Length: 297
Ligand SMILES: [Zn+2]
Image (tube, rainbow, N blue to C red; front, side, top):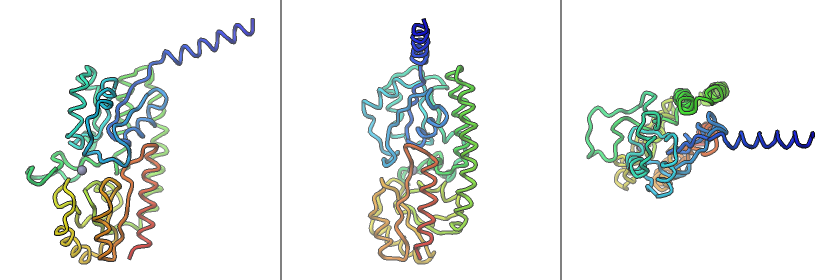
């Protein structure tokens, strides 16, 4: 009898967990996959278009991505034209009716104030971000708003999980706010530091930490550095006493190394995203900047 009860109980348990349909979330970038995992935990399945070392501006609209969007209950991306070259293709080819509704897509950049909004629009300036700089995930304070809105959206799509998402949000924000305080206290020595960047991918990070970019290596946004442009930047590096030349893996090290070899500045490889955890991403960013601040003249 006891064995039968046990069998019945385990069967019911298996049935209930199997029958709980998970929400399918398609994220464009790994930072949003990390955040969705914090809030959605085991009530969601998450797929990501790219890995942390891939350039989010340039993604191929592959059939596997189209089918992932077709199965999605929520598409969670940056927006602000970051994915303008590929996400519209995924959305239209997937023909997913859930994406026609306002609840189907969540754009993080729509939820926060953006830096570097252009005052005049001229596409001849290259691949400019007309809506403002979209690389907003590198400000941990802006992540707070995105986490809150994501939790609300998940509750809208999966009402039974509302309390679960709210609890996860509250746990996440407790740890996140404490981490921000810790990172800020460890990064005070970085305030006022001048850097050169490859692309404006780090504007939000620099804004948060009180650092300044005096130049960018791309002659026009989206175009690779040219010898002529790097030559002009070299003068600025010397004039402004630039300490670090920042780049990320998908930029390539060439331009940063060229400048570093000819000046006292260091070429610094920074992570741009992280598949597993936003905590690890910011930990690595603050540590790498601090190490170079101490090391580079
Ligand atoms: Zn960009």
